[in-house]
Amino acid sequence: MSGEAQQPTELHVRHREADPSRDLDYPPLPEALTVSVYDNHTHLEISDGTPGSELDYREHLDRASSVGVKGVVQVGGDLVTSRWSADIAAREPRVLAAVALHPNETPEFAASGTLDQAIAEIDALAAQPRVRAIGETGLDFFRTGEDGRDAQFRAFEAHISLAKNHNIALQIHDRDAHDAVIDTLLRVGAPERTVFHCFSGDVEMARFCADQGWYLSFAGTVTFKNAHNLREALAVIPRDRILVETDAPFLTPHPYRGRPNSPYLIPTTLRAMAAHLETDVHMLAAQVSSNTEEVYGLWDEDLPDIVESMDRPA
Ligand SMILES: [Zn+2]
Ligand SMILES: [Zn+2]
Image 1 (cartoon, rainbow, N blue to C red):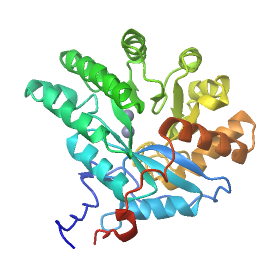
Image 2: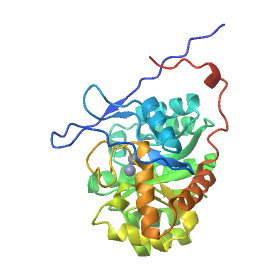
Image 3: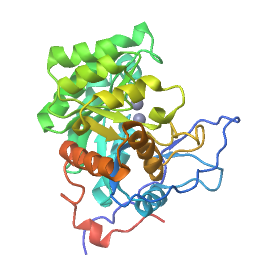
């Protein structure tokens, strides 16, 4: 054997901010799906849960497998988490990666004059075969004020180009910025496979996005009692535009709102979606699974040989 031994990957590179009002217990496992499906947007790099019993990515994936969630797209939002996402995808068959600078991170890069350099690193990561999306990118007018918008627009446009250049999907984060996101996509030209992660628009926007051929990914928010607009949006779009995600550890579906989220809770969200659509959950699972593979390709392609003999982190 020659060369350097592979560095073990850290189990978590971010921690969820403490909120003493939250119940930190992971919800119970839902009934397993018999037609399996994917979680197309999750953040397994963030530790959450009762101190001492936080789940790491392998435990998340094992629980997910046990209830019919066969793979995830692990999403980065800065350089550390994008590198981590690409690294895990390269060694774990159940993981594909998305890499990007989150819109709320971009003003800081711009202020320090490192935005172009950071985007160049995202570009390099995107060349890896198991990095199948640029995301999450987009616009966030909720957490970033006027003074950060210029950086957000610049980075969003650069990320759109990366997705097109690498011919991979684009995962959009859109918070309180529907019109500006759509205008930007139309102005610079959307990638062939464009996904609105955690879709938060209304019926009219859903119809418009679906007409463009864009995908709408529904998170636990679609199960929230007051989210009538999301369920209406779900009902008006063609089934071949629907994706499902957790955005774990956030946005845990009803009735576990506020508790830690994990890809193993996808069946809970999918069942709520199927109930609203008055369709069989396994029919919906088959459709969503095939949509997900259309967008990201197959999980068992481009696996490195290393998977056979990989050293799992201790
Ligand atoms: Zn987001
Ligand atoms: Zn996210």
